Amino acid sequence: MTNILLILFFVLLFLLFSFSKRNKGLAKKSTISPPYEPFLKEQEFNPDISTDNWDLHKLRLDKFRRSQYKGLTFFVSSENRIYYLSEEGNKVYC
Image 1: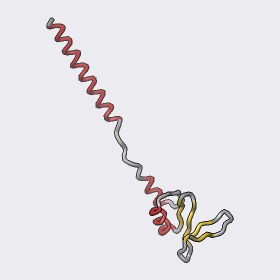
Image 2: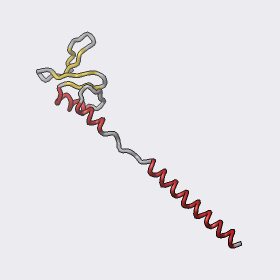
Image 3: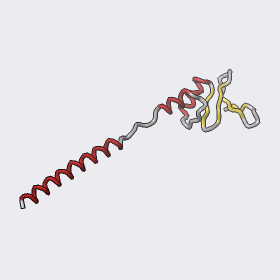
Image 4: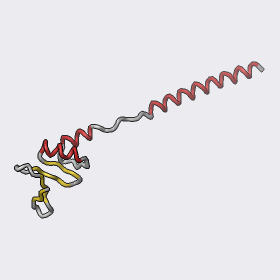
């Protein structure tokens, strides 16, 4: 009877250790990555990437004198007026 209990005890210990090792491996694989910030920096330094962020759009207009906002490229004229080009090529001032 004691041999059976001893074997059962070792089997339970083995299962406990193998289960804990498997859970540690799963915890290491499921790390949460931080938001992708380089893309925001890339948008800040490239006025040809379209953005929906109004503040970023204004910053790029000040810095580069052009910026793409919601798929439309806006420019700043020599008189500091903001415009975009229509399909016909005419300047449309905002």
